[in-house]
Length: 341
Image (cartoon, rainbow, N blue to C red; front, side, top):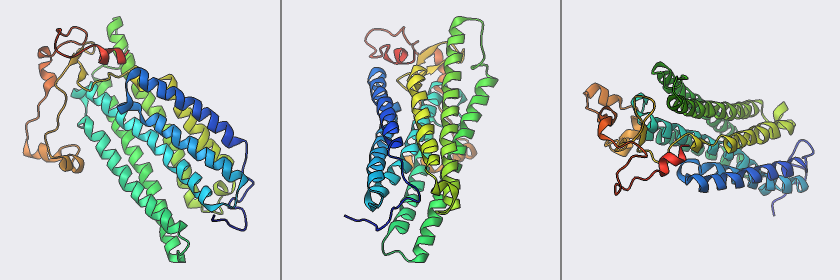
């Protein structure tokens, strides 16, 4: 057992706050598991209960650490779990935006599948930098130069995470602007068009709100790292429970109430016709380029200069079956439509 002579905390850690957050995150996580079963949406929102489990584990260790404030492994475990959990919620936003772009493919500025691969790729790089920095700082054999380099890597990783997320919000905004220009998010005169425009507005506003919440937490971490161990945020406990606790639970609770699958179809082959009303079964948007090329060039800039022809299946929507009016034997049921209700 690795222990220190003195407490690892510059304050007396709360023994009540971790229990409260553990209970509320557990309740939210159980409900998210139920929603994933209800909507059959593990591939889309399965990251929500996964993030909840990370927080639950983190707060369990935090509670144990409050009684053993000089136990280094428990302290590091709690800190790491609470550090990696929020980015998992960001993955939910990546997947939800990708599914939204599949739903309105003719307004998508990027292949929908590239949203996930691009931003997950960035997160993987940032995670590697974070792990490298954390290992340098936590190593018992670290020299002062190693610790300094580790802290620099941690600062860089947190800033890169923030930049990555702001780029994601910018992508959302660009797509939203296109929807506004086409009138897809405006209130219309008929109930059918109002229903579809409300669904689009709801999922976009949901992702905006979630992105802002997660970004606020990232800003907190950036300021904390730059202030250093002697800074206000590191020497007081309440910021942790506000930004890593209350803010992240607010994000979870919001997804409990306005789950993305209330507004999106369960199959990415279902898309919204240009009339803004009719949902159709398309062939799906397939990027035939090599995978590594799609990651390196998600916007297909090379294809633009090479004048490569792109298959725009949405220009032939009359050839595609309307959701709910499929012929028997096509194998396409109303499951996707039901999940969008």
